[in-house]
Length: 225
Image (cartoon, rainbow, N blue to C red; front, side):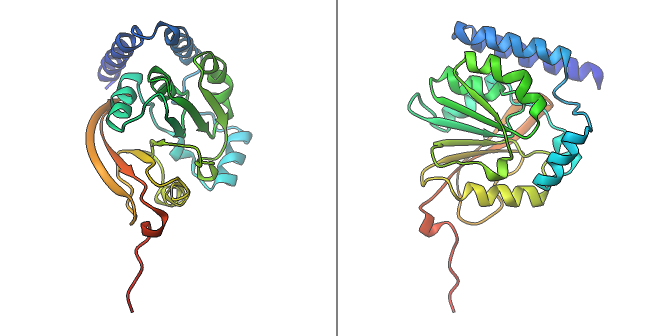
């Protein structure tokens, strides 16, 4: 298992370097993020008083924090498939250390990440700001998505209750917004599935669904008497 993890990490980092080589201005911030990962792992959150308090206020459990990240090369491929351009605005809900934000900046789009753990934000916000991206601390279920054209949700480890609250927040997106979800689709009426893909993440292959938010009048079907 350890050998597989090391091999997978090497493959993802090599692929990220190949992608970032085409955008040298993003290479420095990416390397800084990698260095800080060596100092403080993003995959082993500490059960501190602050973390427990945040989880209680957001209604989440500690196990929901145990997840990997989206490599730059994976995010870039998915964003292109979802139609993200320099005129778009990508919002990453549960952004971690913000690798996916670099992919959005690769395309010239606005990039905003929302992350519950302040430790991630403290370590990653400065390098990301040099890349033109913004990483903020906050609860994804309360995110303002009014300006988003694309939303990424890596909800692999999230409970059904947390996913339900996120779906309610996704319904506030403007019609036409593309929503990308990792591991499972939006299991609620009113979201149009555009495509399904299989891509590589830091823990292995996972399916990703690209949805489109329809007009608000058609998001929730009405029942007939």
